[in-house]
Length: 427
RNA sequence: GGGGGGUUACCGAAGCGGUCAAACGGGACAGACUGUAAAUCUGUUGGCUAUGCCUUCGCAGGUUCGAAUCCUGCACCCCCCA
Image 1 (cartoon, rainbow, N blue to C red):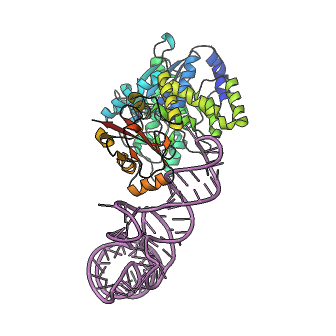
Image 2 (cartoon, rainbow, N blue to C red):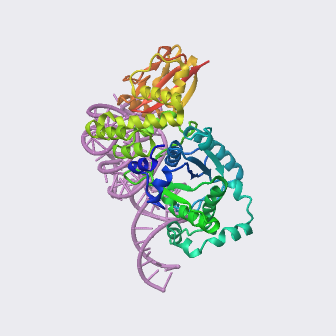
Image 3 (cartoon, rainbow, N blue to C red):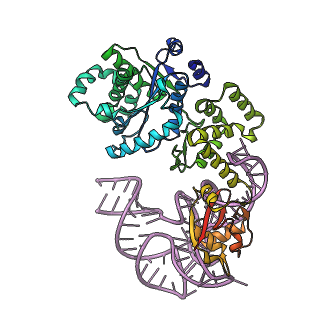
């Protein structure tokens, strides 16, 4: 059993704990049960959930038992912490579908079949829905002094905002607090971890545990993973980076990490990978001595893609990367191309277009959606921004013929550095 | 209710009878450079069967050989006085 506390500490993963002195000893002296909550607002987790998920993984590897709790009940309400407006309520059907998706992703990170410390995923709706309103008020609500609740940062900030805070959201804290008590009673859980914005909810659970059961529970929060410019990790102009291959392809996932800014890479390596301290520090050094190699980003992208998408996912991401930024496309067949260019818009055309005169390049560019008009296509070609199978073309009146097929039925068009479109010619 | 100002391309903003597909800035796109970064530099930025043609300056009419520019009506916005 390695010293998890020390490891977390040097990685910078400990923001606040409820028992700074006690925890190191407590964690190293036995197998404990730890939980973190996940928000089931979609059928996939996104990069933002990677940090708490990795936290649980670290605890599991250190011999503790992780519980992931999907907030089926709380998800219907929405945590007011850090939110500027109230959330839309979800239907039970949506939630069920979301939970199923999330569970399959967790299996990549946590071990659910390893005996004593097997991870479990629970849904707080299973017990919350059993409660009658009266029972909940009597058993749980009476333990919450409103003046204490009003003092919580998450509540205070919303109260002073224009949007205000609904009674439902105000009650969120009670639900999350009760989760902790329930998990303690059912599974012997004694430690809750979460992002630093969860501090208020975590301590509420600890208080409730003491009042209801006389139990000593612990809490630990980790810093939020943000970029140096303050924005959230995992968000791009085109949306969030998801863990599901269906929403974000392994290639895009890999690319996201490969493009992390130098300043953010050290934190990502520490927070999200399990690399040894010595290796991370060597990478830190390489970012100063040879930044152009981006060894840190490569390692980061590789580690995370392998973890989330498996070795096969990583291999396809690497292959796609090579093609997207490499020279000419050759020696690939239809299947490989279509796989690599999974993210790229494609367009089906009859094979007959290629024969005889061939298909005008400008025409092809417009049909593929890469260009909006012939004029735009003409300009792009003139400026040298158009490539067929990754080879630049200069002639405006270039025509596509069967000789341009790079595989059985595919021609790859590209505009600029990374905008691609696939043309498929079939009968 | 009375008086004044405005509405221009993706956004901001010039133009106030012809040389206006419309200055300039931003954005976007492409090229060079580079680390798939940042910055910088260059080019492009209504459409087309393209030295020409068509559509666009709030909307609808009108004056004129000719209108983004002048006139009339309408719509919306802003300011001042009640």
